Length: 463
Image (tube, rainbow, N blue to C red):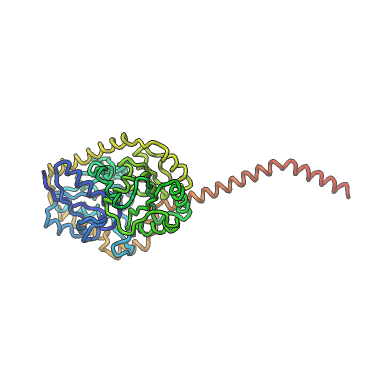
């Protein structure tokens, strides 16, 4: 078995379920190919113990060159997730304070480091939420040109990179689809028993960005399911977004009839809950994937109107299980619960795509070609990258003051979209009211005119 040291970059310093799946899947997928990966995790900030009860140290990306001196990396892997952009957003950190988080560092710094130190750089199917435009187009083209193996998780990202003039791109899918290949479902029920859960439960996940109107509709639907004999599990998947606190709020609004968890769940416990649920209803991209790959029924309750989630349900052939309007929850839940879940064909197609991806990475690691160091050529570009990083407080403060809210709404354009939909619906309702009123007027108009004429005749006679 080949032993390699891998610098694996991503969002591992904050607790968001999907991001923490990537190193688990990658390590085990390569083990199936006789490669033992010693993964050294890197994120924008360091953390002594990785979240979700995983006993791994997370190093700061700003120390990657120093850690390289110790481990002599055989490759750097950008782990995955929706990270290919240049925007910074606020997340709840270990101190429970919301701080600006430079997520772009997880892919920009590796490009600079690998070019300067001659280390192969591979992408493990990350995604881009926006096209690269303006100054970002120039930066992205230069950074992505440094990548030895470019593989992305969706067509939008693929096309966005193609527009930069870069041709050698592998179109793949999110690596979380590979979970059943490395963690067998038969090994998970003991986790459910440990948590005192039974088979007849439904998982619900949303976050604090849902509107009060939609939340109330969702709670009413969950209470109906509860009356039908289903236990409702409120599953926090992004502690970094305050999901655990929001679950408590939901349960309180539902008179504490649902199941919540006081302690932070481990990664394997969350996988087990999703893998054994009767039905998953939620906004989480990786919550839906995890339930789907273990053969469970899923509903994408995408009150964000998030394109990546819509694309996901098209990929797995479940377009009818996707909705962004809470008013449709009732009918979609009934349809999904009553229909047979046929997912084998789609799942097998997806596994073939991922096998191709991991096989390619295997070849790169086995037949590694070391690039020559180009320190001098890229020293100025490194300074530019530093200017973009969180270390430059003035830049971040200016960026935060001027654009943080806009960027946040851009990433969650769903909120704006939902407001526009509501306004549109209100206008349509007004049009409908006017139409009905006009029909009433048209219906009674002849009679009214006749009465008016008769009245005028009487007035004339009286005179």
